[in-house]
Image (cartoon, rainbow, N blue to C red; front, side):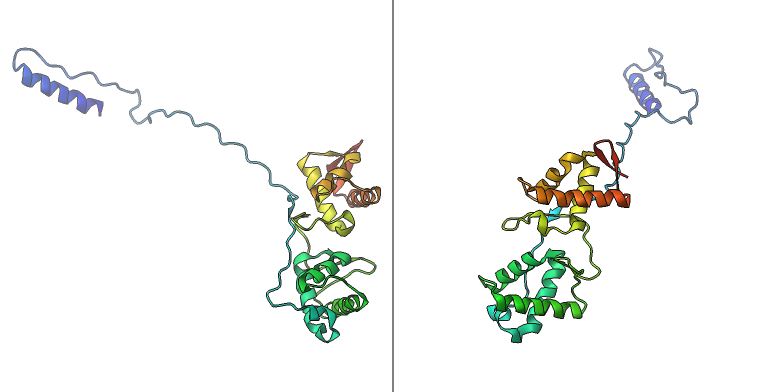
Length: 238
């Protein structure tokens, strides 16, 4: 491009002063190796890639909403056992693992029933047994938690408006996910501060000592299983 530009300038000068002055083509910059590409400005190095998280942050608790019309009679009248069993299975599929007490409260709310008397509780127990027999709900012996068979949590669940669970209503595997997330997120956590930190994830500001013991028991289990390791007073991912 520089050579062509110089030639055009020479021609213009020759037309202005024909025969009077010699016209020279402006010198062109030459590189030692014409094939060598023009140097480019060095690009800044790409930012380092962050390592993928192993344990995910919490997600909002998802409430079950029935796609069909529910009646209070479904909860009060034992003749609607199959209907109630279907509702129980669908609720557990969405909200499981769910504590037995919370399950009753959610069924009352869904059916517009204020009080769970002996009749209502008996109907719920029958519906739970029916759903379990059909393989739709699983319940470990002596455990107050119900869950869908073959379904496991990937993240612990955060409180939402109108629903804040005490630690006693959070299953051990869900507490474990919260513990592991905190330890990974903080690159280690002081063990004595862990129960209160886990409780805050579930929206609990004042943690009773019995609830703190539940979190400690889950933490001890994670250490025994090799998911966590102790280093002095600190806990780290193993």
